[in-house]
Image (cartoon, rainbow, N blue to C red):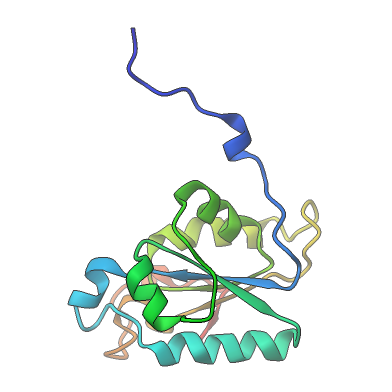
Amino acid sequence: MSDQVPIEFDSLAPIEVPENECVIGFRGGEYYTVPELGLPKEYFYEAMELMIKERPDMCFRVVTDDIPLASQFFPQVPISHEIGHDWRSMRYAKYAIISNSSFYILPRILHHHENDDFYGHPNPVTVAPRFWARRNTKEWSTPANYYRQFRYI
């Protein structure tokens, strides 16, 4: 007998993300105990302004590992912490703002890679932090985390 829980395939299926919704990937937790990792509020608000310029009717939703801290950063924005749903939201949203966490890289790369022939989102937009894990010190400490599809601020 196995103690493994069977995979529910519905939890792996694509989901619909409204065309005007930007999913914000906020990494909290231990990232804010290391000064060079935790991104400042200004990063997220600058990225949100860029998204609103891209689409004036933009609305936002935050996916995170740290609801209490995310609530401080985004007091008026819906927040969730449901790993499977959050990953798929990041995977299928046309618009995304990501933090310097690997959790958000793969779903966004997959979305860009498809060039959206299948999911109907031409030209997906992903905003990411310039210098990735060292944005606050302004040096590329992990240049392998540069993805040409992303817009860096």
